[in-house]
Length: 399
Ligand SMILES: *Cc1c(COP(=O)(O)O)cnc(C)c1O
Image 1 (tube, rainbow, N blue to C red):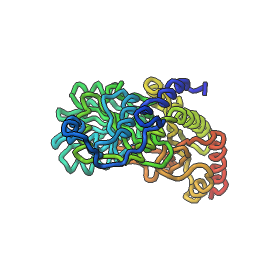
Image 2 (tube, rainbow, N blue to C red; image 1 turned 90 degrees about the vertical axis):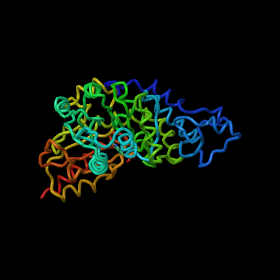
Image 3 (cartoon, rainbow, N blue to C red; image 1 turned 135 degrees about the vertical axis):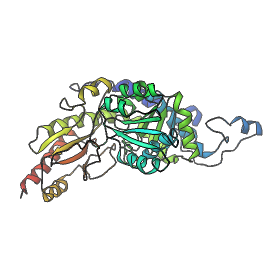
Image 4 (tube, rainbow, N blue to C red; image 1 turned 45 degrees about the horizontal axis):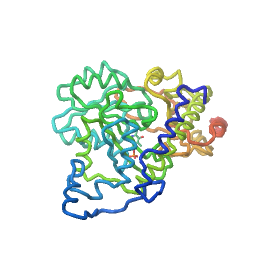
């Protein structure tokens, strides 16, 4: 643990995570806020009914606008992100798309990092495009190109750091400075770092999005999104949720609050295991390159050190060319690495990225194979042994 930068902050945050967003006295002494199920919420008098109407609850009380449980999660995440308010969504993607929908109108221009999460890119191209919003992508680490692409009608700059699949680290402060000059909003997908390892709003971002499905829930047993906005963007974010009727199921919100309690200690373990495994892979003869911002070999390493206080367990590795049969043997040989999509759970994953993601600058990964790896909470010794054995099995069947 001591060999990693920033590894000793987990104590204070662990204490905060144990106590934030709950109120035992208000719930019969129970430690956790209970699951509130319901659509109708009754008022005792006309005065109380009318008094319940607020800007974020324009029709007075109704289950779609959340419950004390929803408010608990939103307030906890909002505190961690340092925002003015947070809104839950039924999935991470839904939080991404509604953050955008709340801000744009026909005729607007949106600039999106080329390294964005694939389904967000699909939404921008296929839905925003259809609504008359012009979409343009910029190279994640090229601030000069971003400046050149800014237009008078640029309304949103959408960033994600490190980038999905390819792990580029973006200079968020430089990007938000450019946006401010143009009066544009900046939305950031902060799922990789969580608000524990990066604070988008402190860097000038207006809306920070979490796929809570990943580390916040942390157990691969539910889907949820949550977006946190500053003062300037909050009413747009709330309007997007309300106007589209977005709401989240109470059991999933409960699981997110439960996951949050252990987020710091889980992330610390993902961080340490991920770095150990990444370093080990970097020295393996079957591996061409490792894409992990916490490794000094990563082009974004200095930016990561400047802005982040840790790394999650998700990174990439480029394997030297193998035959399809070797790849098949490799994946069959894994005991602990599952082939699956939704990282951030307690279990390890390895995914072959095929086809490679669309990247406008035509970056090549040679003729090797890009793997996305999630280091779970298993012992890092076991993970390294597992990878070692699987690579050896694949080597043995070389044609
Ligand atoms: C998984 C993911 C999402 C979407 O979350 P879902 O809950 O699966 O909809 C968004 N952004 C990033 C970076 C993700 O990894």
